[in-house]
Length: 151
Ligand code: CO
Image (cartoon, rainbow, N blue to C red; front, side, top):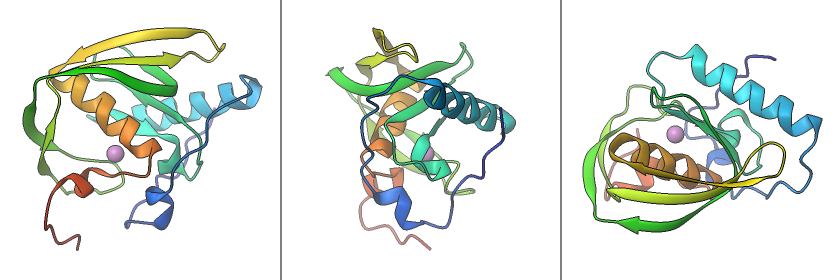
C-alpha cells in the first residue's frame, strides 16, 4: 500500500472521463488499497476517486464513517428527492459550496473480485456516492455550482 498524491489546482485530469475496469486483478486491488489509504490519511474526508490520484479508471472509495465502500464501475440506478448542502472535495482544498444532490440514491457497483452489489444511501452517503461517481465522468462539484468563479 502507498499514499498517493492528490491532484489539485483544477488540473485537466479532473475533467476527463474515466475508463471502465475490465480486469479485476492484482493491479486493481493495489489501486483500491492506495485510494483507501490516501482517503483515510485525510481527516474528515468522505471519498476519493481514481482520477484524483491521476488514474483515469472507474474506481472510487466512499467512507462517511460507516466503513469504507469500494466502488468499481459504479452506476446510479435510482434516485429520489433532493437535498441541498455544503460540499467540499480533496482536490479543491478550502472550497465549500452548496450543491444540490438527490436525497436518496441506489448504486450498482462491482467489488474488487468482480462481483456485483448494490448500495443505497441517504443524506451524506447519497451526497458522497454522487460526488465520487461524478468524478469518474470528469465532473467536479464546482461544475454543479452555477456562475461560480473557480479561483
Ligand atoms: Co471530490
